[in-house]
Length: 368
Image 1 (cartoon, helix red, strand yellow):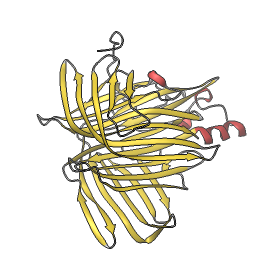
Image 2: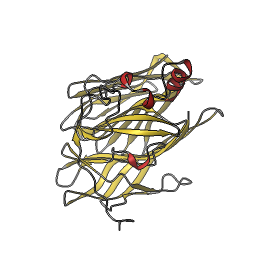
Image 3: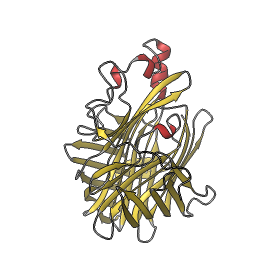
């Protein structure tokens, strides 16, 4: 049952070319389609944490964050990866999970460099992360998004490029449209902006090779589904959120994907990124998401619902990626289980029933 009266969920408008107007004002809202460019260099002072003095430039350099996250899955296997530019630091992680058994085939997180993420969330997207023996790359050309990764074997925590460990080469093909959410970020006396582009339901081809003691294991992603998340913005010193993302085929063959978030620090329920994709076409969902889970037993089932009652999901984790960092000035609590969703999502008067739809949930609380 809904916990309050249903709220009107405004339809997505067509996406503008730029997230920022010619006058430097963010074009806040939720849109169908992905903006061509973030437009941050044009931001007016009131939205970019000040002018061009040294203090303001330093503040922007620390507070501006960017990342690209990718998810792809077949009924047998899932791949999640992220390239993160955290302003003063960065990271890249990759997890490959057997969705039949819960076996974690690969779980790697490497820090020490900031990802390079350009200003184009859609066509023309470029994101890379590089360390010795560690190479991630996400490029989008037209409707095709290619992700490649090559990780070397690790010896005393230092990867060696001469000994390949994991190689990934996959391509996602657009079969519908993405969404853009342009949101204000409350910095107290100052205001910032966050731009996120999301896709779901993309068809996937490609594969993974994992070298174990010289004997390679190969996994195909052909016939799979996936999507990516591009986010760039001026985030709070402490940023936290809960997140759920899934994509798969329903019993009747419908391709369904969804994106749900709760508690994004500085944005809250003003965000417009909650959405469901039905055969490639996105529809907005209530921004008031409610996550119920046990932080002491993260692999216990989760409940994910919207306040208007349109989303009623149960998530059963199989495995989890986690990162915990505490060096006083930087702290991070990050847990991302991988597993299956079941339940119902109501769209335009029709109830779509999910059963074993691959996906992830996330509990993130970071001081950066």
